Length: 236
Image 1: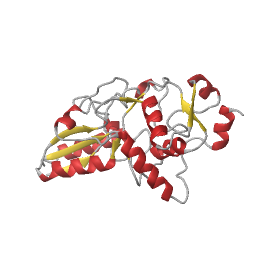
Image 2: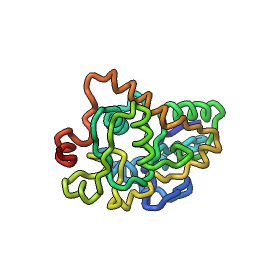
Image 3: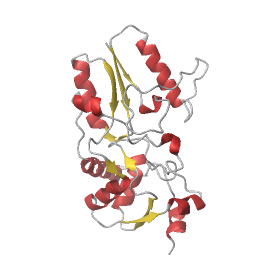
Image 4: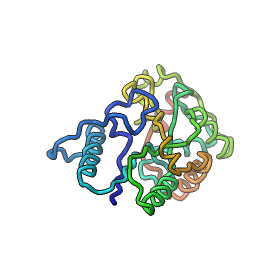
């Protein structure tokens, strides 16, 4: 029995919402491709899945979405937690109704162990929460959970673009409308995993726990907008 952790990035097309495990995967790259980049990550994951499937072993393939939680080395979720805990204004991006999917690493790990213990085989998208949330839900929940002191200023996408503030890089976890090719990233179907026992803890709990972890860090992971960039957009 073999367990492989893939990613939803393995899918060939991310423009549609509701992708399930039957959706087509990216064409695997050749053995000569060894560098992991934004362009090669998905096809390399797809290639790994192909190798696993050809091994003849009973295989469990997990395709997680965006993972968050304490000890996250990417700083993506932590960026927003720091903003939502501060006693100040901060830039909240564009379309408030943009969907968001986050899975807590602890829920993911516990569920995978349970599947391995009973030698489950098959492919599962691992996303959360089960009840859809928007970026506005996420920001308002975080501000409320972390003291209700920070003040989000919702800046139109056009204004952000004029200041050369792009989604994902400068504003982690947010995809503007112009990223149509990845529009379905936060609308992946997790029904098969939920039916197989995946339980997502409340997003508010992940926010609080990540905040507690961020307090222990001597310095924040460099991610997102700088304070100078934010002040330029927010003004006096």
